[in-house]
Image (tube, rainbow, N blue to C red):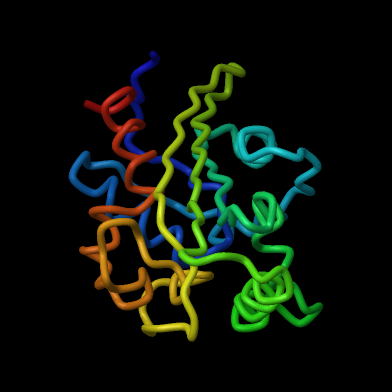
Length: 202
């Protein structure tokens, strides 16, 4: 496992919510976080059918464009009764051509569950895969999983993406109803980041 020795890390995301989460999680280590959007980097095409492959594409593209070490994640929600969908296509389900509409994506998720008469609880997992890549081609991979269930109607205005319809296992509120601090304590990204911090920063 390679330690990260730098003071500045490029987080290869254009998602402000993800960037803010990562900045908060890395702050105690004195690492300055800069986002891909801040550097006007294009979003590379994600051509893999798995989270690790897509995270690696994003990390390596950011390293190539800047020469900086880069951290990328690929994450999404996998719903058991939908055969793991939307999975790596989580963000795609929200695409409209005029930006992402997660109300539309959440509605599609629930509608497809209803059409299948999926039994309750409607189990799902939020999954996060992190790839930390260096300019010499080396990378490290970390994965986090948050089990739970899909609920309806959406609840809460916090978080982002599918958070308002996902209730983590052992909780009675959705991620959308949790404060940032509460979510960062349990989220799939927090689990993956904890592994990252232990492996590369501690």
